[in-house]
Image (cartoon, rainbow, N blue to C red; front, side):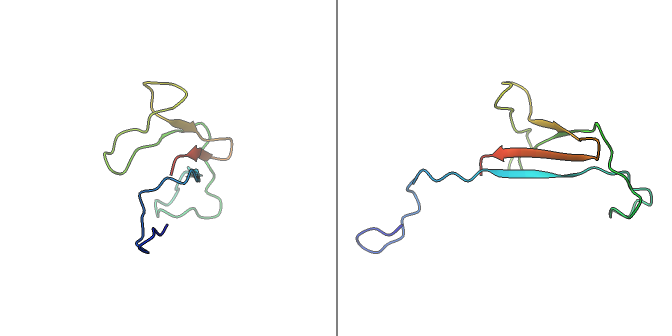
Length: 86
């Protein structure tokens, strides 16, 4: 946003909120090459915990105070942390 002196002001909160999602796939890497190759299936029932990059601490679960934010892989090995604050 520009002010009257045409200076950029990045400290204003315009109320725009754009949540993000983080997710992927857990699979059994038969040949340990770090790439999901054909035939390497997803692993169901794996619990993933989301951590911050700045402090390496678990992200707190907003619905369960005192617990970390977790997701469990589905039948195909997929997990998703949805609607996270940017």
